[in-house]
Image (tube, rainbow, N blue to C red; front, side):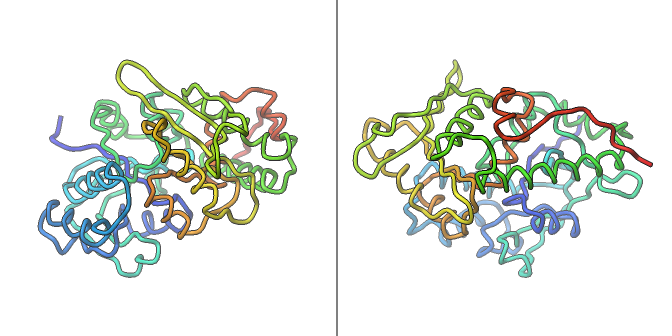
Length: 345
């Protein structure tokens, strides 16, 4: 087997404009755009520059900074021939790294200036995308892990080698295009209905809390909706989720907001106040909203080590777990799963 590395690289916030930068320019890209990775000779120089530019006076938790430094190192150390999976909605795109590093000032606003030239796989002249449900369950789970821009997938090297070695795919581009359009319509309609209260979820925010709790269980957590008087003062979290086994322990407090428009930083601050209490030192924080969030709010969350899931990401999570959600919950959301033919005529 060739001496190569295997990565997942996420297109920042996975917006259409982010994917356009990736696919139109045949690149993968990461942030930290104040630093020109391509102008520096090795990953240690890049890490030093990123640390100076972003973290010297930062209040971010040390574990968050360390995780980001690892991602910087992985991206800089990428070499020609490395295999890359790019999550693309409910699919993945396949890319092979080239030697060329690029710094693109034009993409600074989207914080995607640091780029690596790649060769994407095409079939019949169109970008080859593969449904995630054709992957192993373990690889599907890894690709869903949030908070990672670039992840090492070496443990899945045999599966990834097999994916790249296939000469053709029975799942036609035409069928993929039609299915993608149907999923896009589902997501847009679902997001609008949740934001505008057009579902049958319980009102007052309780319904969305119960939905998020069920989604956490779908993702393998033991989860519970907490009592409203669980915390004192301004501290608050709606859900506690725990996943523990012989190899890991992950404990999360989640604050959920059922909003339309934009959510501010209040919910993030409530989780920060919870985590500041000594008895919850081992917990991580999550803020989930049905609304959108501004870049400033995201930056505030990142500085404090809080993960953010906005309305688009929430709907993505719902769609990815449709096969696991209860029939009752799907009915409350107004989702009816009926098999249908997609005509190719």
